[in-house]
Amino acid sequence: MLLHKTRDVGVLLGVMTLALFPATLAAQDGGDAQANNPLAQTTSLNFQTQYTGSITGTDGDANSVLLRYAVPFSAFGGEWISRFTLPINTGTLPDGSSETAIGDFNFFAAYLFDTGDPAVSFGFGPSLTAPTATDDRLGSEKWSVGFANILFNARNPKFQWGYLLQWQTSVAGNGDRKDINIGAFQPFGFYQ
Image (cartoon, rainbow, N blue to C red; front, side, top):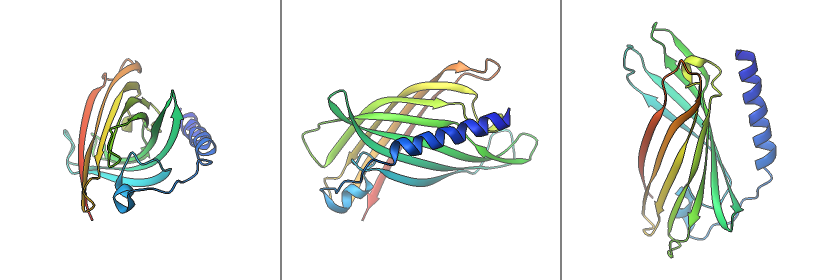
C-alpha cells in the first residue's frame, strides 16, 4: 500500500509541475510591500516549517515542512490564485517512536475580489485535502472539502497585515478513522 501511495504522490507532483511551471512571473506594482502578499498575481514556490512542541497523549513533538506552490489564473470572468501544499510530516507516535512521511495534499483556489483599493487584497474560494499520506499514521485517510478566505492589507509601506482563514470537513475516506471538522485562523504581519 505504501508503494502505491508514494507513486501516486509522485505522479501528482509531476502533473502539477508540468501544468503549472509554464506560468510566467509578472512585475508587481506596489513595490516591496507586495512581495509579502499571499494573493499577489505571481507564481511562487516557498517552504514553511510548522513546529508543534507537545502532542497530546505522547511525550513528543512534531514538525511539518510545507512545500507550497502558488499560481494565478483567470476563470469565470475573474482573477484567482491557487495554492498547492504538500507537507512532509515528522511526528512522535503513541508508542514513542518518530516517523517522517509525506502528509495529505491540500489545494485551495481563491477568487480575488476587487476591493476598490489596489493595496488591499481579498480572496475567497474552495479548498480540498486529499489523503496522500505515505504513512497512514501521519495523515487523515479522509477526503475533506471546505473554504479558504484571505485578506492582505499593504496600505502602509512599513507594516502589512492580514489573515488566512480555512475550514474543512471530511466527506469520504476510511470509515474507521475519525471524521474531520477543522478550522484554522492564521493572522500575519510584516514589518519592513
